[in-house]
Length: 414
Ligand code: SF4
Image (cartoon, rainbow, N blue to C red; front, side, top):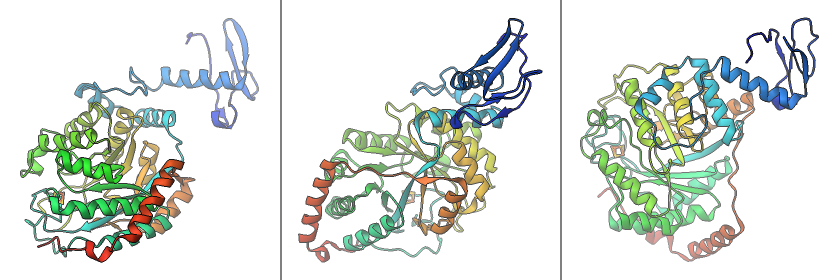
């Protein structure tokens, strides 16, 4: 901008409402923009004024990244660290700008999570109450009957969920489990819900079987940076996780993959986690960012709280690095006040888990979520079912009606 141009006054209105006025020295504020310069006064029509003003703001006050809003897969740790280090307002401005490029900023995708098999997991994830290694008082539950899962999915749909996630506390499913979980997928999909599962590690055949059953998403988190990973889990490697994610992609499913913050990691580890996710050849379609829920009996029960601003920063950086992904405000919402959640939405989070339970830890009650949505003017994102999918679903419903549901139950805890 030419240094002799003088813009001093406030802005009235906004670009979305048809334009703004920037009053200029000795000019009456008006619709559009009037600028005094050494070349004389210029009147601009509102749309152009909006563009100019946005460019001015970017250029003058908010140091924009060199690749603003571009989908990239080559982020360096230094670039990501620099984003974390931005003044908070600049980071939020950038994240919100990227968010608005690809999403309706007032829509949030709503998922419900159902624990289809709880506890007795042989893994040693230090945050997890479902590990058999920690005495957390969690009641173990065997694999849920298919019929019961379908009932839960119907209830989730009735409360506004568009995606139903089913989680089992397994290191990996056994082959004898596969017919049960694939039938669950078919049944939930038949209700017109998107389906997601998290069952631990998958080999190629298992991933293909789930994809063939119609599973839309598979969740498998990286949890943290490669450097910090060994502090949290020792019973499976980072590479194991990457291989499962590769099997999921190869089978044609969408990937839900994120991590947990507040586990005692450094900011550099949060940057490292996001770098791993952002540099995948295809970004995960869903990126859950969890805040540690400290559960008594787990090794992380006394971990220091993470500053909510650091949590929001992580969401904002995730939004900038993975512009087209749904960034999910996930576990830990129960501990957040409404203001922190609102900041997370402003930072680009556009997906939440909704319902009474988030696997085994409390989740804000559904009506609280709806109240917050109402205060913020947020609407749940719709899930579009296409015609051919409807036909496929009708056929699956028919098959399910013929299936003897009772015969699909067995005790997986044995
Ligand atoms: S996070 Fe998953 S794999 Fe790890 S202990 Fe919990 S249930 Fe098992």
